[in-house]
Every structure is written in C-alpha cells, then in structure tokens.
Length: 470
Image (cartoon, rainbow, N blue to C red; front, side):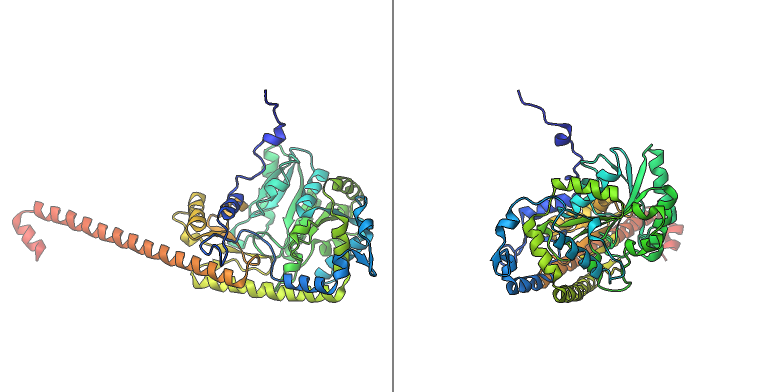
C-alpha cells in the first residue's frame, strides 16, 4: 500500500504548467549552440545579465586571495566553514546596503540592522508574504507581472493574487481607478487585502515607475491601511532616462508617519550584478517585527558564509562598483537598442523602456484574432518553428493579447543577431502567407461575383441581356 503524500506535495498550484515554464522545457530539450546545435531553440525567456561578466572575472583574477578564502594571506576557510547564525556577516550587510545606496544615486540610506538576507529574491518575496498575510488573504499586483509570482507568493503561503489591470492604452501605467477596481474585486471575493506588490523597474515591461505612480501607491496604502512591497531587483539596470526613483526616496517624507513601517523593499544581486547562482536576496524594512520574523524564517534559506565573504570584499571595492554600475548600464543600453532596432526592421515595435534585461514586444498585428488563443497559437509557432523561447503576455497576466517579453542580455551579440534574423524571416513569411490568403479570398470573391452575375444575366430576357452585355 502506497502512503499518500500531503496535499501541498500533490497540489497543482506551483504554476509549472504556465506557458512561461513550458517554453523553458522546450528549450532544454533542444538548446541552441552556435557550433554544436545551430538550429536549436534560442533562450530569450531568461532574464539573466551576462553582459558584464568579464568585469567580475577581471576583479576575481586580481583578487585571488578572496576566492581562495584568505585574509591577509592567511586561510580563513575554517572560520567560514563552521556554523554561522542566520543574521549574516556584518561586513557583508554593510557592503550590501552601501551598494544599494550607490545604485540609487545615494539619494537614500539603508541601515544594515534593518536588512534580512535570503536565498535570492524568490525567498525574500515569499518570506514577506508569510509575514504579512494569512492563507486566503489577498495581495494586489499590477499587470503584467512576473509569471514566477504565481509560484513565489501563492504556492506555499496560500495567499491570493488579485490583479491590478493595467493596459496598453496608457503604457501599462498604474491608475487610481485600476487600484480601486482591484481592491473592490478582492472584497467582492470576500478576500482581505493585506498589501500591494510592485516591481520597480518593472518585470516584464522594462520601465520605471513615475513619481506620480509612487505617490498614488502611497496614498492608496495609507487610505486602505495596508502594506506596500517594492521589488527593486532591477534598480541597477536603469540605462536611460527617466531616472530611477526608489520607493524609499518617496518614503522619506513619511518618516514620522504611521505608514513608515508598512513599506518594504526586496533586493537581490541576481540582476544588477548578474549573479543568480549565488542566491543572494534581501528584505529591507523599517518594521522591527517584520525584520525579526523574517530573520527567523531566513534560516530555511540562508546565504552561505563563503558567498557573503566573497561579496563583501567585491562590494567594498568602491572603484570596482563605480566602474561596474556605469559600464553595465552602457552595455545594457547598447544591447537594448540592438534588439529594438532589429525588431523595428522586422516590422515589430516595442514598448518604450529604460531598464531591465528585456523588452515588452508588441506582436498584436501578427495575431490571427484579438484573443489569447491566437496569442498562444503565435507563441507556439515562435517556439517550435522559429526556435525562439519568448514569454507570452498571457503568462504575465497581461490584459491585452499579443504582447511578449523578449530577453536580450543572456546571450552573445552574435546569438541575438541570429534571433533577430529568425524573427524577421518569420514575419516576412507570415506576411507573404497573408498576402496569398487575401489574394485568394479576393479572387474567390471576384469569381463568385462573376458566377452570380452570369447566372443573373442568363435569367434575363434576351433584349435585357443584350443591353446589359453592351
């Protein structure tokens, strides 16, 4: 007799069936390699920053003692390998908050005692939801949003996500009306709203929130007496204007207000520094109770002492961080421009963006109909025929069919150019196909009219027919 597993182990709420994850599965079956598998699927669904890896490797080659776990030439391997508590190394927390300040133009300051280290932003977001919400409570999130939130915020916590519907009509900006409608929808479903979560810069839009949007969010959470979580893991990827505004900058004017401890920030080194494999995330909050609870919870997903030691040395090198931040932004801007111009040459436009590792691409004109069924049909063609894994808007809960997230920083420039050639060939082929269909339909209609006309003519009396023929 087989023992039955728990409901959590057997439930299907992980989100693995989303087209976002299915595209990854297809890529893994047939990954592109310029030499070994040039006809394979190119991974454009992975928001990973590989553009400045050489800067990290260069620093590493110049600081080999750090990589070898040495301090002043003496091994500290034993010190790092033995037990460390879950509060984290003080020198790393100090270096991390200084890097966060530098990313934000030193307009805000962070207290190392208010930061909680987690194994990546995934763990940070889930931990915050555990702190803020009971199972069945609601978190409001503007659409489109990162597909992984359906897993990160809901699967183990039991929380519900209620979308704040944003549309292409205003560039997917958050409005007061959309906020109120989402809140009312939650109330209509008898859900208790505990907070709003935003990504700024946005994943998948690649845009930064305006000061007006941030002020609107603050007014809203004050009115509703709820929390605000600002996921700012792409804050160091802002490569062009408008300049980035962190929610912490907006919060400065509320320092003595009650809302001061209801705003929380999630950060990570996965995107800004291109180190997702190091699994370094963080929660920052002015709320002592949340910091204490999240610190206890972090024992389920700690950052290794070795990782903390290495990164504390890296981030404490101000010459390196200054050069890295500047050079990384230049490279992102150049790569973004390459993708956008390439798609424009193929007749495809993108939402105007200034941040992130991706573009929000408008393929509505390629849909066979204005439906999400048509979007998935197009997505399947792009994955299986064009051999590009991109993320459909449906997986991001976009309100409008025909939008796709396309990543550009996780590959070489040569690979991106191959991807652009593929999509251009596909669009040209689809256009020729449509032209043939339209031509055939016109021909069919013309022939049909001719046949109808002939039948009508032959039904006329002879003298009428003769007049008509003349």
